[in-house]
Image 1 (cartoon, one colour):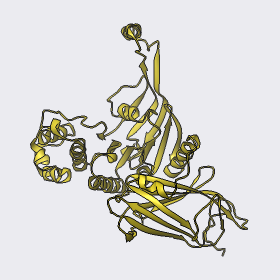
Image 2 (spheres, helix red, strand yellow; image 1 turned 180 degrees about the vertical axis):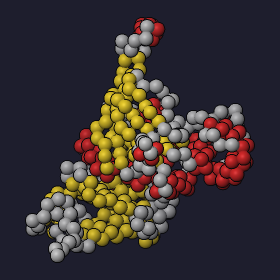
Image 3 (cartoon, rainbow, N blue to C red; image 1 turned 60 degrees about the vertical axis):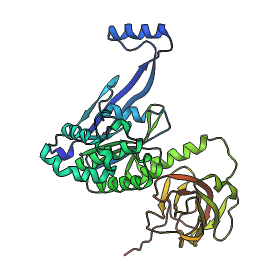
Image 4 (cartoon, helix red, strand yellow; image 1 turned 45 degrees about the horizontal axis):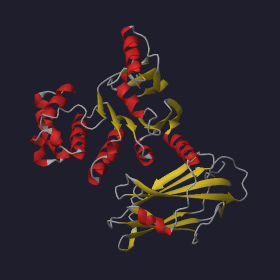
Amino acid sequence: MNNASLPLVEVNHISKRYPVLANSSDRLSALWDMLRGRAPTRHTTVLSDISFKVMPGCSIGIIGENGAGKSTLLKLITRVLTPSDGDVVTRGSIGALLELGAGFHPEYSGRENIRLSAALYGISDAELKVKMPEIEDFADIGHYIDEPTKHYSSGMIVRLGFAIIAAVRPPLLITDEVLGVGDESFQKKCSRWIDEYVNSGGTLLLVSHSMYHVQKLCREAIWLHHGRIEMQGDVFSVTQHYLAWHESKRVPEKSLTLLDCADFEYGIESLLCNGSEPEGELVCKFGSDFLIDVVLTSKDDAAPVLMCGWGRADGTSVYGTSSEMDGFVARKISNGRYAFRLVFPKLNLLPGIYNLRLHSLDPTGLRLFQTRHLDIKVIGESRAYGLVALAHHWE
């Protein structure tokens, strides 16, 4: 069989349980169970009956709340942990960026840790000599490359780890919130590299709390909930359902007013739809122009990014874009204030109830700060069915 048709990872009905060790009696009981080769009498289940495959060239985002089992799942795939039930089959080398500093010896210098990592990836001394300048340039930590890594900041650790991965380019890259660490310029560099890596055929397994990251870098998603797979499939469908669920369980909060933008590094100061401030459910006519005018604030005066996402009331994803994705730079209207106008000409959403989300992001388009939600009712006459009216003709 052609290796290209085989999964790089097969996760087969894995579960992970840990013994409950609340007191000395629990510890003795757990030790006795372990010596007898039995499952713990008292235990907590972190993951339960998880199965999926990672095919070459696919990119999968793993999402879910804290404690859902995301990081544990990655540790099982990379064999940092062993499953209580089931098994994981991997093919080819895996580049993993999990916990900060994992795999680095704190007493060794950055350069020595590079050599150690290269040896683990099967890179010869001759190959490493060629790649070393590339690694040093990507990490960009200066003379600290020859200092012990125990003196590194968290951002420097990530820089070094990612630089090694970028030079090795493993068939499968597994990352756990790595894009949330480090300065903005390095985050953007990593995001660009991952984007290029995936587009050139690399395989990605990404854990992130940022739905923007997941939607931008992944084509598929898995939603973990209480240690089980709640949903998996197309990234936009899964993330939209997750966000809808997340919103539904939130305690009702007061609507964000004009003044609330001051609480955010990059905030939404004002919002107009077709020239008016939205109040309650907006009504838009099928086939008419829909204009969105937004002013974002920026405490450091750097131009922020505006993201827009449409969804049906049932959580079905319809469309999403951002100024950064479209290469649009906002117009500066005064210090720390930027204006955006997003035009949807002849809006072709079929009649129904929709949810419009607007997000303010940092200038790199990586971190989300403030969100506004609008309910929009599209009215009009159409005998078509679905979400949008696609231009077509009969011959």
